Structure formats: C-alpha cells, structure tokens
Length: 226
Image (cartoon, rainbow, N blue to C red):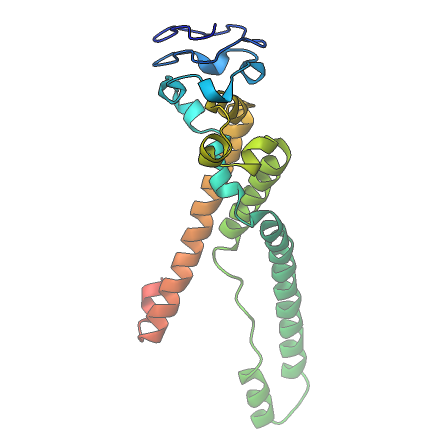
C-alpha cells in the first residue's frame, strides 16, 4: 500500500498487519480506531504516511492516552496514596481525641474541684471539629489514586516516554504507530480520564473553599464560610 490514496476511506476492522504504508494518504480516513495491527505497519522514516493527523476521530479517541498523559505525568501516584492513608488516620485521631475530651470533662464535672479551677480547665478543653468536606476529599483522593494506578499499569510505555512532538519531530517516527498505542484499551482510558477529572474537580473545590474561608477570616468575615 505504498503511496496508496486512502483519503475519505472507511478502514473499520481492516487488517494492517505489517502493511507497507509509506507515503499512504490518510486524509479524512474514518474507522482507524477499529483498524487492526496498525502498530505493526511498516513505514520508512523518509516517506511517512501522509495526513494521518487528519483522520476522523470520535470523542473516545480524542480522550486517548496522549491526553491522559498530561495528568499521569504529575506526581499524583504516591501523593494520592499518602493522603488516602492520612485522611482516615486523621479522622480516627480526631474521634479518639474528642472522646477523651468528653470523658475528661465528665470526670472534671464530678471531681469536686473548686469552681474557678473547674471553669478554667473546661474553658481550655474543647472538642476539635471534624472537617466538613472530608468525605468529598476522601472521594477525590480515591479517584486520583485509582486513576494513577490505571495509568501506571495500562498506559503504553511509548506514550509514557514520549510526547507526540518528541516521537514524530525529534525521533522521526510515524504518528501512525504513536496513535495506535494511544488508542488502546478504550474503556480503561475513559475510566482513567473520568477519575482524574472527578478527583481533580473535588480536590480543587475543597482547596478553593478552604482558601476562601481563610481569606474571609483574615478580613473579619467568618460568616462568609457558611
């Protein structure tokens, strides 16, 4: 198929096993996601397949590993798992502390201490409130951790190692082979992207509300937090 004109063709389920695609015209070709063995096609570096970046891609193919790589390259894997462990630990510690405070207050009230000592101790002994949005933060952290795991395990090594520009421009390889890897495992890609997006939105919302409350308190407007 060297120099073949495939423009506007539908190559759905076509088998390209070791096909010679040097110079082939892929302008506005459809069905490339469903084409088989594109990764094994033979393309000479000096005569790359033409206009492959013009192929028709539906939304699931636009949300590919190349796009998800933007999130995956962030140091979220270790950070999200660390936070995932810290949140339940922190909530548990608060519960233990508050139970201890309640038990101590009950003992002081029945200890027979002088009233001024009694009031002084109770004034400085109070419960710590559990953060109001901890459930949303936990959900966001779980989503980011799961998405990072999917990316680490299932994203093709070629996509992890190179951007599209590096693969095609710096190393002179074909976009056909790059996108063939970027389109792998559609449902895992979509699940990974959805988890990254949902987790990021939740985390940003929690952070934004906390910053808003901190600013409101600094300017004497604590009611703005409610």
